Image 1 (cartoon, rainbow, N blue to C red):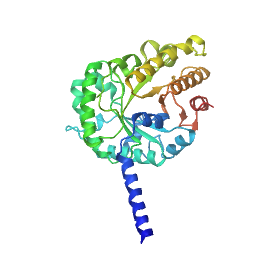
Image 2: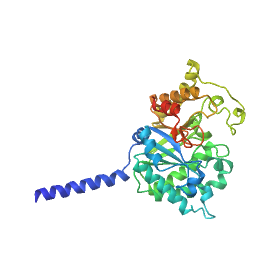
Image 3: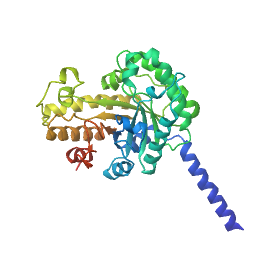
Image 4: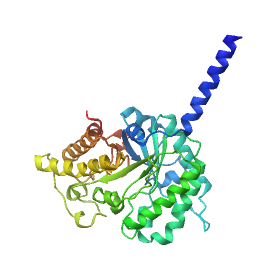
Amino acid sequence: MKKLLFFIALFISSFSTNYTSLAQSVSARDQCLKLGRGVNIIGYDKAFWQDHTKGRFKESYFKMIKDAGFSTVRINLNPFTQMDSQNRINPHWLETIDWVVDKGLEANLMIILDLHEYTTMADNPEAKKEMFISFWKQIAPRYKDKSGNVIFELLNEPNQKLTAEMWNIFSAEAVKVIRQTNPDRTLIIGPGNWNGIESLNTLKLPENDRNIIVTVHFYHPMRFTHQGAAWAGEYKNLNGIKWTGTPDEKEEIESKLKVAANWSLKNDRPIFLGEFGAYDKGDMDSRARYTAFVARTAEKLGFSWAYWQFDSDFIVYNVDKESWVEPILDALMNK
């Protein structure tokens, strides 16, 4: 009888532990550490969102990403075109997210659900605010029982008409909505001005909510990282610019990233470097050298990170050739 009671108690204890692991609050700093090395995925794969079996991104890639050394996938979501006149999200689109989350978790990856509607929000934030809040009203309860390895990122790169002051208001409202169903879910929030490090001091977070990771993005110097990119304004016609790792080049990167590290220490908020990389038009040696230095510097400062991006441009994996871009992968993984 004693043995039976012991095993019953052990079973109940195990069940309780497993259940608590889903809902129990984990410190944001521990969660940031778990994020480790990540990569942005799927965002521009339009066919995928219509039928994930016909997209460029394949189910096998989740395990492949994990095996390559990544701990996290940041999933770039563009739901606004999937909403009806009542801001209800297309059920098929939601089912596709379900599939991504489940397959990512099966591969033992951390999952970041990143609302990536930064352009639409920047153009007319007041008109789009209801869509923004509606998205989280639907996503938060849908994933409230998912593992703590699923993290919500409120909005990628708020900018332009979505000012830093307005963003503080919008994000505070979204946090309240999410906390109604996900009181212990880790959130990611970044400052205005494209998640720029220089705008960290404008970011206002709920003081009593410590389960928040702060994100910044880093593409300095833009004349190198965005040379030849058609959308990059003054940098679109540049070419042949190298990054050789001179003391001055390294100091520029270190000094900017240290601003974020100092802010993190002062405000007791961990930092996630959600995007960095160099566009494909740069020479490969410079891109790999730059990527490695940014990644290692971020790690020395205690940041987790996610490379931009898996496919499309800045790529680390060539889907057409079904092979890793080895210089970039090696740079990320410190090989």
